[in-house]
Amino acid sequence: MFHTKKKSILPYFLVAPVCLVLLLFSYLPFPYTLYLSLNTVTPITGEMEFVGLDNFRMILKDGNFWESMRNTGYFVVAATAAVIILGVLTALVLNSKIKGTNLYMTILFIPWIVSDVVAGFSWKWLLNADFGILNYLFEPLGLKPSNLITQPELAMIAVIIVTVWKMLAYSTILLLAGLQNVSKDLLEAAKLDGCSGWQAFWYITFPIFSPILLVTVLLDMINFISQSGMILVLTNGGPLRSTETLALYLYKEAFANFHLTNASAISMALAVINIAVVVIYFIANRQSRKLVG
Image 1 (cartoon, rainbow, N blue to C red):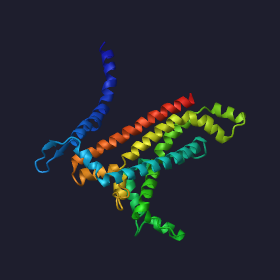
Image 2 (image 1 turned 90 degrees about the vertical axis):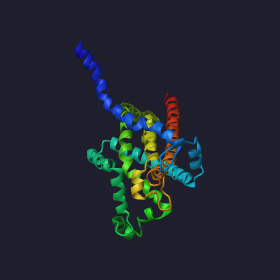
Image 3 (image 1 turned 60 degrees about the vertical axis):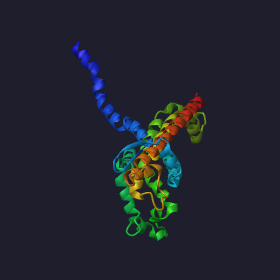
Image 4 (image 1 turned 90 degrees about the horizontal axis):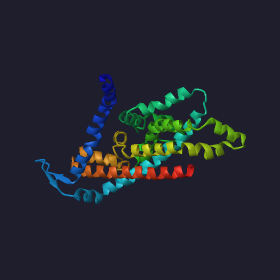
């Protein structure tokens, strides 16, 4: 009897640390952030005063907020499209059982395990205008890679390149798992029926692994919407705010300008954007299941 009781409690005991971490760092901060967004703080005394939606009205009138929104939209759409296209192509190559797959996977995963700060500093040194190694490598071609982080019209391209370089392995492994769910027998039967490689992919492979594709797009978009650390190190939102995303704008408002209530309102806006992305995912997933069915 005692053994049975102990065994029944064990699963709850094992998941308790994870639940505690989620409670402390994910669930409890949300209502407190919402509370802060509806109040204003007196700098000297720290007293709270309820102001309702004034903080939201303030950020909606702030030109920097809308500029950060535009930067975020450009960054998220471009980075997601690039990493998904490259991820699908890489997953298809790795799924074809080429020689040295394990070596290629190892090389591919090196950027992913590097922290955002390390990745940002590494690329900042590589693209340095004075002694960046990429300038020396591309000088014979008449190219100057350092322009990517020194010119406002090119800086976001640098951020997207570094982001794709780092996150490609994450997307590839998810897409590769989806491709491996496709039955080899179906592909062989399609080949015997005279289907070309593209036809087999479009009519057999794609419908089967499209749910994994949608999940990958969702996770990538959420990751990119919240991206701030690597951009902070690489460009600090510059030059001229050209790479300042909403998450980075939130960080600066909270920890540089100490406008905690404004930052809380911005974080609520980020939460709404993430929720909207999830809702769109569920709608798209439902439609894809209808098409497959």
